Image 1 (spheres, rainbow, N blue to C red):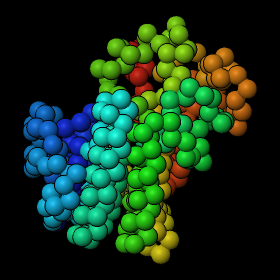
Image 2: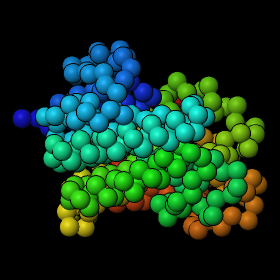
Image 3: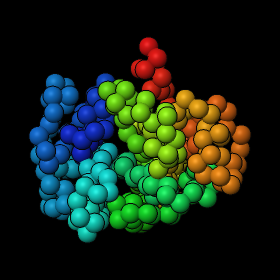
Length: 292
């Protein structure tokens, strides 16, 4: 019998990629969103349900019969809704899903945290680079604060249940169609995308991180007695820029400590923890699209 995984937020930017990734690897996927499923989901042989996961009863209903959840649903960025709505909606929804997972005894919870917990947008300079998991907590928006709070909620549920709750601190999730629209305009102005140190993550690589977080062994994640709730940086191997990363950092954020050598256009976010715990590596770059 295949593992049944609920993917919440399945109609969002990342959701269809995660649904496709899991379906391609033999998972029985339930796609859940408050919005209608897009063709990228309906064209796959997966079940779909519309639900409002801020309602705890609906969260319990949709997770019935599932083995695991990849929880992506949330207001996905600051500034889309009033601050109070963003914070309340996200924290309420995240708690409802974690509590429902506990009710049904799910064996793994994977959820979308955010790079914003690490200090984005970088109006003020980062404390150091490459930015890693220790660059936390540094919320600069109510949206980021909702993710910081949820990381603590996840850690608490992991302790209560002995089930790993893996938070993925995704960088700016983009697809191939986004690269030509966004990146060339930034090449002449290093300040244009300084807000996240010129970082991004290809949606396909973000999806593979979700799958590997589901597949990682409990002992890798510190589950059980040590209550595993790692929160891992998920970013591309390179920046969106054509200039060397160390040069950009020195120009835009002079004086920021570079804690290890960064060659060429290597990312200023460190993904060592995701590599070590999940066996994950970013495999895609915008360069394959724009330089093809």
